[in-house]
Length: 289
View 1 (tube, helix red, strand yellow):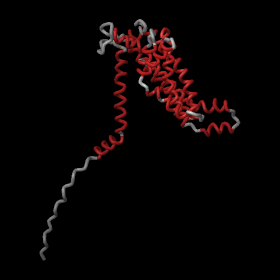
View 2 (tube, rainbow, N blue to C red; view 1 turned 45 degrees about the vertical axis):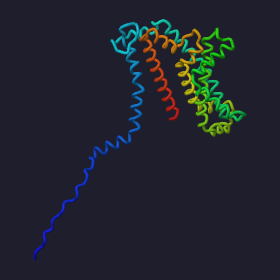
View 3 (cartoon, rainbow, N blue to C red; view 1 turned 90 degrees about the vertical axis):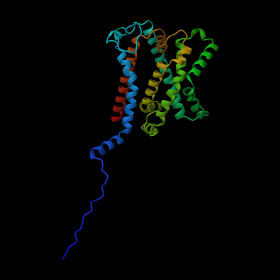
View 4 (tube, rainbow, N blue to C red; view 1 turned 90 degrees about the horizontal axis):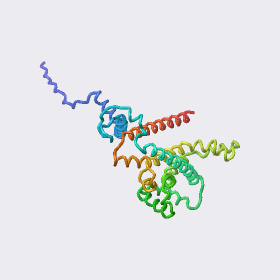
């Protein structure tokens, strides 16, 4: 009995699937794409700061600092006040910033409590007006303040007082917005529970409300200090003959840039970084307890 021979046809060729290592790499990249982009943006942001730190140890060939690294030196760190007027401008900037921060924080916190906790006629209009200094160009604000000071006869006494008034005006809105956001997210039942436990209004505010609102108040104060210390445009209109640190930097650019300015910038960055780390650790410790 003859049997027919059956020929086996080969299976169709299939596409070669990626190796497991390649699949895992692609999956890891897709899962961490947002983190990678964020790290790249953060690195791009810190490149100029690293450049400033490096130039603070540079010994320039001439009187003015250059963009090229010449040789390593500690002289810039040991002679910060060598350029005429540098330490005086820093002292004035710190005095203006601290004073403006204290006033803006107190007034902004009171305004935030009033807008969040109380109902009064014109409340919605007040919320709208709060944002106007934040949206107004600084050139317009500075020229308007200068015109107001001249109209009231302050043109001959432009200086510390007029700078503080101007800085409080534009820092106030940022403090109000920051503290208001914190107060809006607070749970009012905690205050009601304190009142149920026979605490009076002052005790409830001191022991419950104020500690809960303190992170927002501190954040608003830090933001106000940074804005006040860094401001140039409004200060240029209202400073008169007084020279703050941003004005000193602008003047140094015109007549010769001393390398000690890089030292001041490095110190400001390190102090700000340490403060942010300390506040974050304090906040996490309070949350843990």
